[in-house]
Image (cartoon, rainbow, N blue to C red; front, side):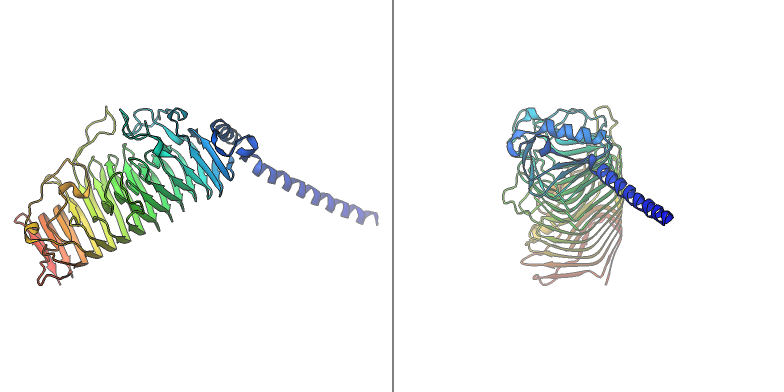
Amino acid sequence: MPGQRCVVSKKLKLHFVIAFLGMLFSHASFAGNINILDKGAIPDGKTLVTEILQTAIDKVSEQGGGTVIIPPGHFLTGSIILKSGVNLEVQKGAVLLGSTKLEDYLSIQPEFVALRTIQPTKQLIFSEAQNDVSISGMGIIDGQGAAFSSTLPGDDAGITRPHLIQMINCKNVKIEGVNLRNSGAWMQHYLACENLQILGITVYNHCNKNNDGIDVDGCSNVVISDCIIDSDDDGICLKSTSPAICKDVTVSNCVVKSHCNALKLGTESTGGFKNVTFSNCVVSPSVDPDPVYGTLRGQSAISVEMVDGGVLDGVNISNITITETDCPIFVRLGNRARKHAPDAPVPGMGTLRNVHISNIIATTSSKLTSSITGVSSAFAENISLDNIRITNLSDGTAEEASMAVKENDKGYPTPNMFGDILPASGFFVRHVRNITFNNIQLFNKGDNVRPAFIFHNVSDALIINPVVRSDYEKPEIIVKDQHCENVRVTQ
């Protein structure tokens, strides 16, 4: 019937329209994507593709966003600037190589003022004041950082030795899946960024000085998870090198190996730290046998530091397994008072409070052990440690147990700032108020007569259910000096 044919015809037309619109939308969703191989990039690892790569990034950003694809092959580049809406996808089998010639890197003066942005610096991948930027894929980004000498006059990280990634004052940043290797200095520096995710990446950084793994500096709303880090310098490090506070940060499910400090807050602390969690991580010595800096075992597993003013408040560290590090736990309130800019005021005394460390299993062969210290004019306070088991494989003489420990108020905060031996076999605690140790188990192997705890100038301290086992017949649990007040041990 004519009416029926008309209905069928309308239905067919509707299906064709829907299909056609679907094709348009599908094409539009991929219209912004650019494969650099299609733009003439040569995958020989020798021919610079910097201009092709930057042009692709610019075009994708101008078109409203999309992906710049680095396909399988070796591609050599100098500095590139990542822009809003762009995902740099390094596909499996792709290797993006940083140039070994310093002249291929841009000297960029960031607008954001911080300790490490007060002069032009060089990066392989740079982004400032951009939104929705990301780096993804299962490929490799290799900075070839060993090519840059660390002995040149005026040598400094980011100036004569490029960083691999630096992102400043960006929003909605995501780094996922990539394998990052061999930076000339810090591998990654995220400064004053908001909504930062670093997920499932692998870092190996052992070719030069200042070879940190991840540096998160004055950022907020940060998630770092499922990463494997092996670095010569600090592994995962939170900083505050400007007045911007580093806050609302969670680090979880990571494996970290470092010749220096594996999980760290500090050294720089001007803006402070608030609401920070580290959980479910494993710390062990680096597979690299030749430290440029630090020690073969690593200087510390957990470091919580405030030395340049600012406030540290609300840090929770839990479920960490530590194999062989010089110092399992290092907590330090100091007064180095380094300015973040030449014209900035000198920082006042900082504050370190409300730190909770729990469920730690650690082994160490070092006589350094763990320390929690403030300075005589300012106490670290409100610190609790629960369910911690430390096996100390070092020895310790009676002379070492009675040794004096120097003050070092303005020194660089590192576990050996008081010397390479501490008189306690478990924890040396000084200038601290309101501290609790609950269910601390210390197992001393060998000839170690040092007491488990030494307290100097400590008030309102409680040790609950300590367990100390030693080859020595009667190990002391605690020794305290005359400046301690309200220190109790309960069984």
